[in-house]
Length: 94
Image (cartoon, rainbow, N blue to C red; front, side, top):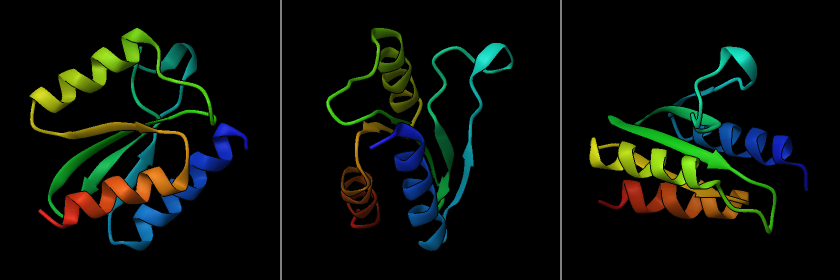
């Protein structure tokens, strides 16, 4: 499955749960290592790096996610809609 399709499915799912989610844009105008999706879910800052199945974040992306977590955000990577749903439901069960 293409990464952009997983991004769209995750974004649509989270928005249907009442979250406000934005898609970051890569390229020369983007922020280095910024995750693909970011926003707010139920008062919590959420950042999500999306990968194709079988791929993992780069070292820089992983370090950025860890930095976001230390700052108090929920930050994770996923390679599927199911992974995104699992993290979301852990968030709302807190």
